[in-house]
Image 1 (cartoon, helix red, strand yellow):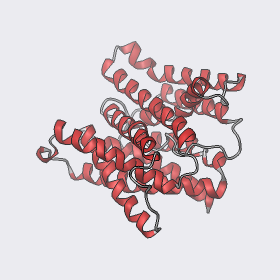
Image 2 (cartoon, rainbow, N blue to C red; image 1 turned 45 degrees about the horizontal axis):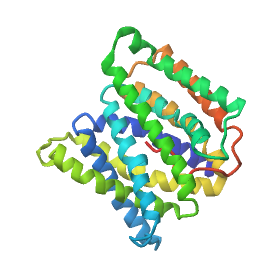
Image 3 (tube, rainbow, N blue to C red; image 1 turned 180 degrees about the vertical axis):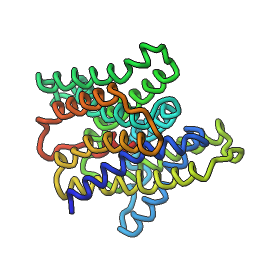
Length: 300
């Protein structure tokens, strides 16, 4: 059952890129992300009530880190990915975000005292960056600035996720997972609602039915329920095995993009995917058996 849920989580996160692509066609990125975070927060509130879990008091010190997580693990990456997918394929977005563990290891070398680079990790980083270069190679050769900027935005999203992962390890360890997820969605919503009202004036928008359905599925299933499934897996099979989802979701996203959206699947996509997955495998190979961040970047 646990391994079925592992594949299910990989499929959910892989399909999320498809829903972002469809939803972002008629809803501006900030408003789309606002809807995603807000609906996910409502879902998690209901779940927390059913499980009789309570948020920390509003003046508790942990809220400063929940605000950090809301910004770095939701607002910034969700918006950059949604905006980036208006310029690049959903499959490419998934592969680039999948490089997040590589950025995490690199940043952790400079920002922590106990996670230094090793020759194996350095090789993984080199492989991953080579994979990213190959993914960008066609756009650079063709001078496709439109696509290149979108891809770079998604790389920045992966870096933001990496920063968030390191902060979660430092400051949120030991807090209930559902509480962290709900607090993060609430703080993200508090940032995004005024931004959406000011910049997009959502009452003037005319989103398509497909975009609205995609937003609903992404928020409830791809965000709220995926959080809870991820943490359940950590408790049941351990963090190391749960990290296998990192290899599953990009493959699912590339397949769905080609099947549903007719996205091009060329040699650079396949080569970039293989190199980045191999790089992630090397940088995570020597991690402690159950060492994992409270929140990971693979939540798109």
